[in-house]
Length: 189
Length: 150
Image (cartoon, rainbow over all chains, first blue to last red; front, side, top):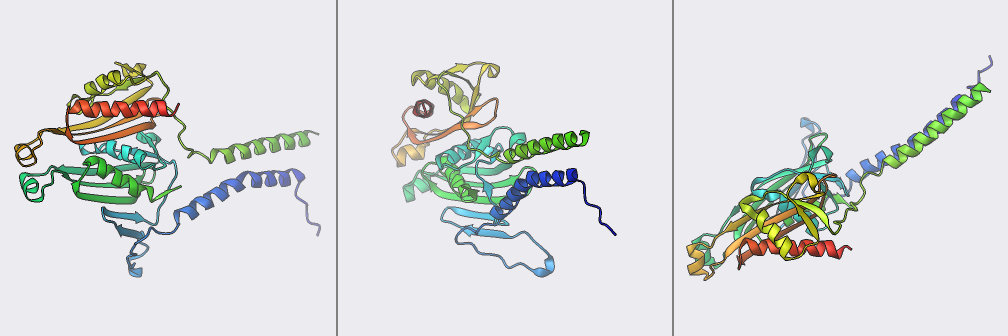
């Protein structure tokens, strides 16, 4: 039995399609590889229970300022578009300024529909009372803030950070910069 | 003859699609926006009337931007937050300080693209002139940012 040879046009078309799709496949593989990069320092991996199934890998780390948690070692690509949702007391403005001061390579946008990621959170300030001024001699405020970063398309939360400063030298500015500094750790530069 | 022409046109189309697809992958590029001198800026209302102080400070510090009253006429928008805490009796008596505590943060964004091109925060524990000081600090740093990048 003679085998029929495929027509030349089909062969040419297949070759050209292969050239067209190869760079896209290579890029998607590269993106998957960068999302599984090494964990941040001082992390403790929680032991996963095989009976419960595949739970997301939550890595937590403590610093002198607060606590951060990354899910599945997620990373944000540099210059990704980020939307910062309004927060109590206008704290989102301090986070934006913090991202600039700490030179975090992200593009902040004011429109959520144009963003890849969304940062949301809460913050609270407590000014020094008379007892703190009298006994400790400090008039700086207590600052607390907590933020999370979620993928806008999937809704998955990939990063969380909380900060608490009992004697904040620069109030909300310090808390905003602390958040920005820790966001920089998960941005791929 | 017709078959060869058909094949040739298909190959050209697929090669063009390949080039477009490979170039479309690079969407995360660093922002290249700079604030041009003489840019039209709309100052959005800010809490505690801080926007008025900001407009005055822009004029006083001779920031090279044009403040507009309507957002439709502007290229950039300035938004932010501000907070003032007057000195309490405890602060006056115990710390001997009667100045107010000022905090402010502003963002400067491009209205068309929606991207934030500049941002600044200021905190003054004992502000001599209250909101005026923090507004002038914001204006001064905005001027430095515009003139520094030229």
